[in-house]
Length: 204
Image (tube, rainbow, N blue to C red):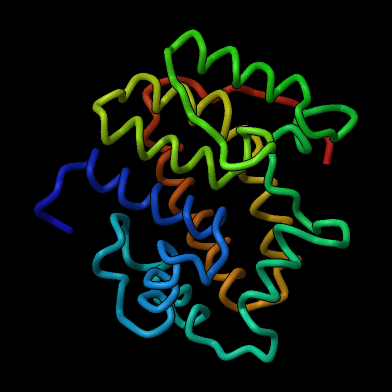
């Protein structure tokens, strides 16, 4: 991806990560991504330094007894308690609730910036997959200032802790690798931010 702009590279990685965290691996948008990550050498196309990607690629290719769709159900849907809930408010709100104050702050920020982002179902907008896809959309539309605000204020303050817990509890090589790929990619974004990242208290 040497011939694409940093903005295009960012949008590509954010959209891929967002879709993989948000949608079932059987989803028509995601199934080709799963195939690419588990069956091909994708590391040259990922827009970041390749050194940590080789071990991540090996983990993606590691066989597992648990079907991938079962792992996704266990990690993101339930019916049992999710080991690493993918919503920001669970980590940022003292009561660890959905639709908490941090979600309301995100909604207010979206209103102030005329960002309309309709959820497919009745769930908070601060799902990590949703926020990553929103960041991709902002980049694709040349809204770099809002993209950086979204990262610095509404995603990066809690995502590092979420990803640590997610990786520790994923229990499936594909999702362990996804967590590590997101961890490395978001760390690079954080180092390139032009605005300070918000310092927020985490409650999990």
